[in-house]
Image 1 (cartoon, one colour):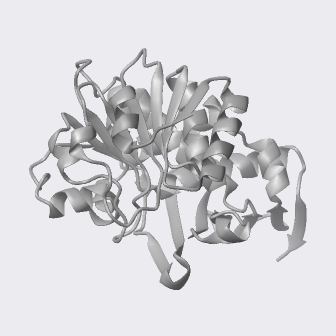
Image 2 (spheres, one colour):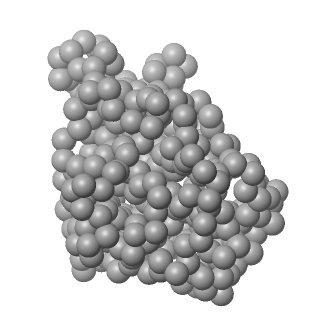
Image 3 (cartoon, one colour):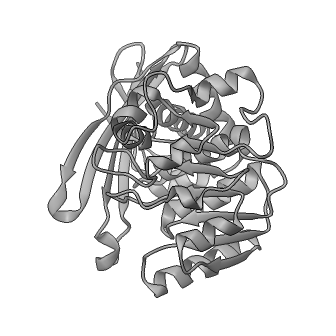
Length: 332
């Protein structure tokens, strides 16, 4: 047991952990350990705050062989941008897997969650999306939409982003300007979801929608969709019929996706059932090859966010900070 608790600020964590291929590899390893039966992931605890269109989620995972584990407390209050605040926040606790004692407090303000979520999107695209796509789409123009486009560039380089969002014109233009600057690609705003989808080979949906809006009619041969907005019983981005058009269906964790993700809605609407083949992303990683076998296949991946992602990125940040002698140590 260490002599104290290491406390790290968001500024320090941003310095040590970047959205890069190393982070993607760490999160990918976490999924592989989950598929190998080496991880324990408890159900997500979600505290809704409907009056503020908000929620607080608690996620965690223990991975065999690692000295510590993480407990993540993350909030999403989606009216915050109206008062000039980010919609998402949070922090992670690093707990010893040997003693159960608290070892670190990562005051990341949701940054590590944003990065690990983007890494999962990149992993989904790596193993499911077609190669050689020039134009990609994103629904939404918030922080995670931006991270998803950055992460996608690391695994499936592209030349153009088509964004569709119901946000204000000011927010959409801010997204366009930011993405052009960060990625040096063409970025345009579509007038409708159908217009966006028709142009893209890969689409990522990143909204907190409470009702499915992505129509089955938008799906075309060869399309890959990664959906990450649904992580609660009352959220949905993809209409169930989208899954009826999918040749390959994947998710991060079936136990979560059928309860909280897009697969819940698809099952309720009768487009998937207990006999439907659904791959967990860790299973695909273990196979070492793409789940896509033909260029014209439609692939869909439902990501709800799994505790192994949090433990992997939290321990990565914690170990770097210790090595760099960063942060402050407070007594127990």
